Every structure is written in structure tokens, then in C-alpha cells.
Image (tube, rainbow, N blue to C red; front, side, top):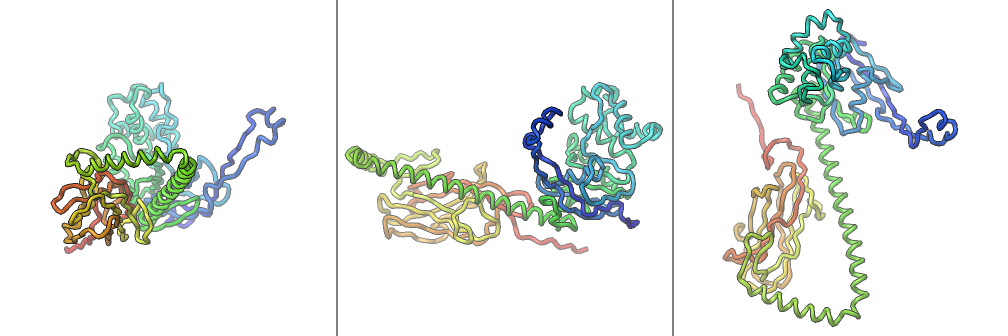
Length: 449
């Protein structure tokens, strides 16, 4: 191994055998050999990387991609099926905090047990025990049995032991949310101090902000192989873009499945209706007459319930509204930055001189992000036919990732609601911009010193 590398991983592969119906006893294994059928699932399929002394490496990827398995191979909790791992120096791991703690022993006694697991002698533990207790902020409870500790206290004690064993390499697996906000900040300060002192750190986490802030390099593992490696910013961007595209594809797939199921249901309903036409024609005719009477009464009514989700005089009625992506495909999930189209279909129950169509984007809390109408945008829509459609084109949707509400409406030229639909539908926005708030603003930083 080169002198500047403290970790060298070469083409490691790891598989697990998944049994369908495994025999538990010797008798079962002899009599029922077929019950030992299993399949091999490869978790790691050829991972190669190097880590230099003093570097902080972040491992990112979806659940089940092999991150934690890789960390356990580095700690020698398990071993690879092929490939090699070279490590230079003492390793301290924060994989299972508190592993080895005995619930009936005091915090002080468990410090000695846990530190000895990391390879410290009693003399070395004696020299460090006060630093461990001070860092954990548990001096008042240190001689109490750990079964009386809260989960936060338990984790703090285990974390304090792990970072005070003077290791050369520190391996951390998804345990950075330790204690309250102040203690978490203290932990990160300590990790930065360890990194500055030349200790090599590898972190497995789903918190990409932590990877960008703390790590020099990162590796994105996907389905057991390295999809991207390099600077933390480069890797995080590639990983988040992949996750956003996957989320987009999943939502589209769900929509298509729902549309297919709905289409089958409509076909069945139409078939049933067709079978009933001859038997129910008289009832249907009388029902239609009754509906005409009721509709006429509604159209002439000037009573509007402004608190309802949908309200208006219904002189003009919105029959449906659809969001379409840049390819003209109907959707309820949109990628930020792409062109979208809003189609509002309507029918005329009672003619007006002019129609005003409007729309709005709202948060799930009901906060208006954006709203406009044809009158604001100086577009006059006179009556031309009894059914129609208006289109609104949006050149660049600037919303950040999240779920939003579409509101559509049609009013007369005086603002009297004809058909006002508050929560017409929900739609999702996928955006790689990780800013906070609601909108993504085109920006550029410049430093003048």
C-alpha cells in the first residue's frame, strides 16, 4: 500500500444467501433437503477506492445499495467473498452505538467495557475516562445503570467513547443525530477537530448536506457498484439528480397505472349501462328532465357559498383542467425549469358577454405562490361557442421540490364567480436546486476581496 493511503479497497464483492425455506434442525436438513433452496444476492459487485490520511469520505446511495455492508467489511465485522481490503492504523467504528453495553452496569463500567472492545488497555482508559465523561455531559448519571438512561443519553455515552479512543480511522454509519441540537453541534466540532488532526473519517449518511459540508470526497453506490466518485459536490449533485429522475419516473408510472385502472372501470360501467338502456329508458328520460329543472334553478340562483371548495353561479362551468409537460403529455409531476401548459376546458350554460379565466399555484398550507387571470394579462375572451378550452403557457416553472395545489376559476368581467375551484388537484415538482423556500431563483455569487 502506498504511504499516503490508509485505506485501499480493491474489487471487493459480497453476497448473501437468501433461503426460501431453510431447515432449522439436523433432522429437517437430512429429511427435507429441498427446503435448503436459496438464491445468492450480490450486495457489492466490485468496489474499488482509496482513502488518504486525513481525508473525510462520504458514502451515499439508496437504502439497500451496500453502504453499510461496505462499512462492516472495513471494520472486519464480516469479510468479502473476493477482493482485498488494506487498512493502516487503528479503526474506531460508530456503526452500532452502544454495542457491548450491559444494561445493569453503570455508565462508568460500560465505558471500560466498550473502550476495551476498541482495543484500549485499562491504563489507556483510565487516562481518557474523564474526557469521555465530560464530553458526554453525563457526569451526574455516570454511576447509574444504563438501563435508566434515555435513548439520547445512551447514544451520547456511546458516541463519546468512540471518538475518544485515539483511532487513526473513524467509521460512522448514520448516527450523527445524537442528542439535542447543542450536542449535535458539539459532535460535529469534535469531528472537524479529529479531521484536522489527521484522522481519516468515512461517513455513511443520507444527509447530503453533511457530505458536502464535511467531506473532501464522496462515493455514490448504486446497486452494489460505484456510480460516481470524486469531490463531494460533484457526487451529491449526480446522486440527487438520479433520485429526482427516479421519483419523477415512479410518479409517472403510478399515474399511468391509475389511469389504466380508471379506464377499465369506466369500460365496465359503460357495459353495464348499455345493458340497462332498454329497461330504464323511461326512468332515464324523467331523470334528465328533473336534472334540467334543478340545473335551471341553480343557474338562476345568486346565492354563492364562498367558503366551499367549489362555488359559483355555473353560467360558465369548468369541465376539467390538465397540466401538460414540455412534450404535451398530461401529468401531475413536473420537472422544474421545463415548459408546462395548463389547459382549462369549459362549457357554457348561459352566455355572457365576456369570460375571465384564472389559475393559481398554492402551497399545501394554502399560501398563494402565484396567480393570474386573462383580465390581468389583458386578454379578452368573448363568447364564440358553447364549449371551448383556454391554454396558459408557462416558460420556466421556478418552484422548488414539493407538492403543490392547482386552483382554477372562471368569473365574469366584474369578478362574480361562475365556477371557482379552490383545490382542483395536487401536483409535484422535482427540482435539483436544494435551496430553501418555495421558488428557485437564478443566481450567481461573486467574491470581491
